[in-house]
Length: 461
Length: 81
Figure 1: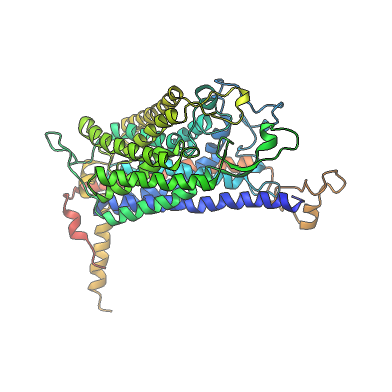
Figure 2 (figure 1 turned 45 degrees about the horizontal axis):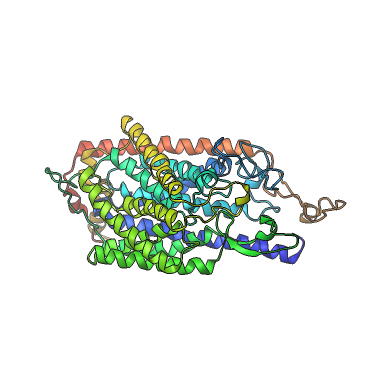
């Protein structure tokens, strides 16, 4: 970096992504509070540790192979040709697998003076990975082993969501080219996929003891601390600001990139597909979709705090696929519709299939994400899915978005979750023993603490 | 061991090049060239963690299952500090 303006642009981008990572950390703080608040007293510490341990597990595996998967498979492989060719000037370089950019053995995956972006961009994606794993975590509380959850967290956080991001959340992704898939703020690639994965695991894991009566009627378990749950969700909202910003490229010159003409410059923020948007515009839509979700959930749940807060999240998630292009009032309406459908589906699935989703994660993330993708296909019908549309990209359309939703929720979500849970179940590693579930995962810790308390109290000095 | 011993030298690589200043030697961490071995060590440590903690957890569950306290037994162990 030898000229000041170029250096400022690079370092601004570096700092921008770094800030999004710090903000997104709050999503995880929120998830931890939320899960502990939803769990019973006798499970608090293990619930917290289960969610906490996904941070290092997903981080190291995302370094080892998750980031590489994202850059390696936009073409499928073999489903659609890449536009990253010599003629478009988009070649990333050869090397390990499909590219050198995310090769864990490459010097670019370490501190170096020639690169200011790879680490912070990697970290932004990593925080999405934590979110995907955390979505699954909440649904499974109080009966899954930490060992099994660790494996499942790595699978969703460093493998399956990364594959879907490569396919549908990459400017060279085959789903854009063939299906006209559009998912600017990850209704599908994070939320539908993680929600589907959680449902697949839940189908094998089974409900908590006592969740259903002998006649199959569901019972409400908790939350033990609704205020901790609500503050946790508030923190998730806060982190979501960072999530939205992290989905953008903050400054990019689309003039030469799109071939707008000699000397034509157009500096703008773009979304992950390198199509133009503004941070200002998506701020309208973030807040309006949050509000649409909150209003709808307050109404449909008759003011239940747990569902009202969850509805705010479901609202944002529903509108996220098209929140780079919607009008704010469209975003609000779409959010409200998605929230109501997610709420209704949660209770229908619970009764019909005896699924015990302890925190409503499948509904808030999975169903809302799927609904958001489908609505996006209709509302944005005909929009280009890419700025590189001259290179053979399909426009956004309902059929492509429905197929895309199926890929996200079922193919890369439900099926891998179900299969992996079956394998872990067959190995006897999935669920804690019945006696432990009844006693509570923290029983030994609590017993030991009580002994310490008595010993201290009886001490003479 | 040290990848660089002088910042001035490190930042003025390719002084005769047309792209002088653009081509500083990037890597500054120790033992450049051992990235493959470092990856191998990292993967082994990761897998070892699963084995060690998975076995520990299973053992802890077995012990507690044998003791089989009731669903309300934990209430006797709630501390007041």
